Image (cartoon, rainbow over all chains, first blue to last red; front, side):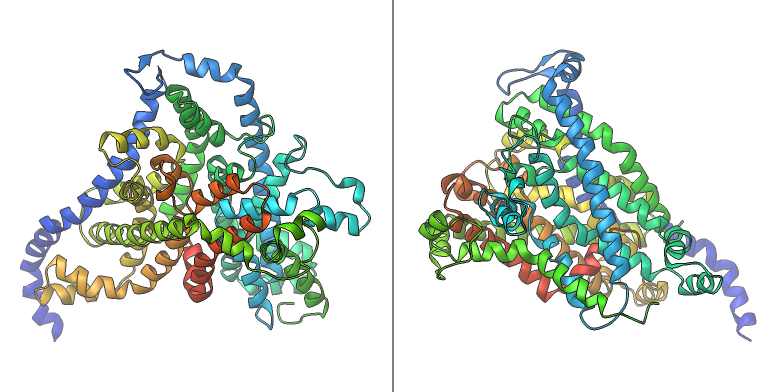
Length: 308
Length: 273
C-alpha cells in the first residue's frame, strides 16, 4: 500500500531533494569558515613563516638577512644541537618504553571489576591532571640532596647511591625522564584499558582450552587485538617526546652543561633567550620534520577510525 | 582468570599505589614544615610540627593569587571559545555537504598535532605586530587556534553519529541550520562537550609554553609560569615552593575528582576508540 503511494512521489522527489541537500546555506559556510580562519591564521600561517625564517639570520631588529641553508649547516656542527638530538632519541625510547610497559602492565592487572580497582586506577592517573611544570617542581623536591629519594636510599642501605640527581650530568636526563613517565603512565593505562575492553574474551577462553598459558594468551591472542591502540600510543609518544618542554624547563632548563637539552628546549633558548630567530626556526623545522611521519600515521589511523 | 583474584593482587597493589602517590604526599609534608625545620633536619625528614607558613608565604606576595586569577580567566575564556568554534565547525562538516569536508577536517586535526615549537617564534612576532603581545587576550586566541582542530575532530565524530531522522524532522519543521544547531545538536552533544571541557580545562590550565611565548610581565603570568618565577625567588625555601606547587595543582585536582568520569572519557576521545 505504502509502496504504491510512495512511487509517484519518489520519482520526482530525488532531483529536488538532492539539489536542496547539496546547497550549503550561507550560515553553515560561516560556521565553518570562522573557526577555519582562526586556525589558519594562528597555526598554518605561523608554521609557514617558520620555514621561511629558518633560511634567514635575524635578531628581531631591522630586516631579516637571507642566508640560504647556512642555519642548517651550522646545526649539524653545533655540539649542543647534536646532544639535544641524541637526548631526544633517548627520551623517545625511555619515555615511550617505560610508560608503555608500565601502562600496559597496569591495564592488564586492573582490567577487571572488583573492590579497590577503581581506587588503584584513580591513583595512577591522578598525576595526569597535574601540570608538567608542577610535576617538575614536585620531583625537584624529591631529588634534592637529603630529600626523600636520598633518605629512602639511605634507609634501605643503598646510601652510596645518594647524589645530586639533577646536578649530575650523568643522571640529570634520566631523573627528569622518570618524573615525566610517572605522569604519563596513567594516560597510557587508560588507553590500554579501553583497548582491552574491546577485546573478545571468548578468543582467550578458547586459547586457554587449547592449553595456552597466560603469557602465550597475552602475546598471541590479546596483543594482536590491541594493534589499533598500539599505533595511537606509538604516534602520540613520539609526537609528545618531540614536544617535551615544560618538565625539562621546570627541572633543569637544559642543564647541567646542556646535558638535559632537548630539541624543544634548545629551540626555545635560541629563539627567545638569545633571540637568534633564524637559527631557532631552523631547529623548529627539524622538530617538525622528525614529527611529520608520526603525525601522518596518527591522521591515517584517525581517518580510518572515523570510518569511510 | 578475569574473575578470580588472589590476595596477592591487593598485597602488591596497595603498596604500589602508596608509592605512586608518595611524591604528592611528600611534597605535602614539605609544604607543612617550617624553613628552619627543613634547614636543620633535612628535606627527607618527617615534619616535627605542622604549620601553614609555607602556604601563607606563597600566597602573601599576591603573586600566586594573581596568577591563579589569570589562569582562571584564560582557562574559562579559552575553553568556552574553543568549544563554541569547534562545535560550529564540526556541525558544518558533519551535517552539510561541504566540498572536501574530510580533507578540511584532517587538515584541522593536523594543525593540532604540529609541534608547537614550529609556531612559537612567528606567533610571538604576529602578536607583537597586532599590538596584543603581553596580554591575556593573545594567550586565549593562540590557545584557541592551536586546540581547535582536535576539538572539531572529536565533536565531528560525535555529531556524525547522531541519528539522521532527528535532522530530517527538524528540516520538515522548517528549522534552519542555526536553530537546528542551537536547539538540537548542542543539547544532544552535551556528553561530548562535557568530556572535552574537562580535558581542555586541564590542558589549558596546565599550559606553560604558550604563556612564555606571548607574555612578558610577571603580573600577567598564569600559575605555571608564575610558579617557575617563585622557584627562582625562593630557591631554598622548599616549604614555599612545595606549597605553591600544591596550590597550583588544586584546581585541576578538583576538576579531576568532580568530573572523573568525563575526564577519563575525555582522555579516550582522541584515541580513535
